Length: 134
Image 1 (cartoon, helix red, strand yellow):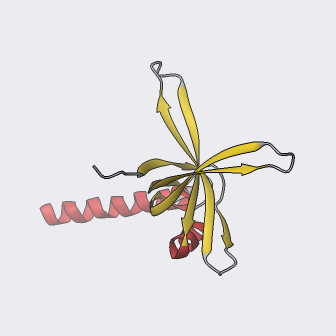
Image 2: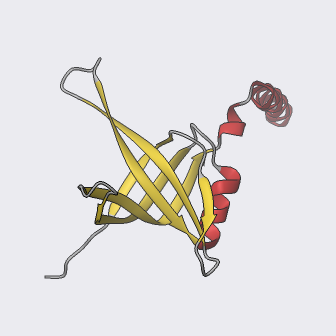
């Protein structure tokens, strides 16, 4: 049996992504993703925060097009690490190294002027459909 380390998450960004570069010049973007599930009681949502890391050109696209509140679908692998703090304490960290990021709905698409434009366009479409049907 082969081992597998793969995860898929869909959620919203808690803050704007942060783009940096490695010493070798490779772009890397970090952001936090919130996923929620409903507990046994519908009024009580449980939110889990995930640290997401994206590399290369996809990292640049994330920084350019994603903002706080954007909804994304992430596919990647879990990476666990251990490090020591300056005061000698051992800490553990988990993050998702994303190999695939799908931008579900950009924040800018929900602006009120965009919604007005969309409704005007759909009204025009309905009148064209009525003209064709008659």
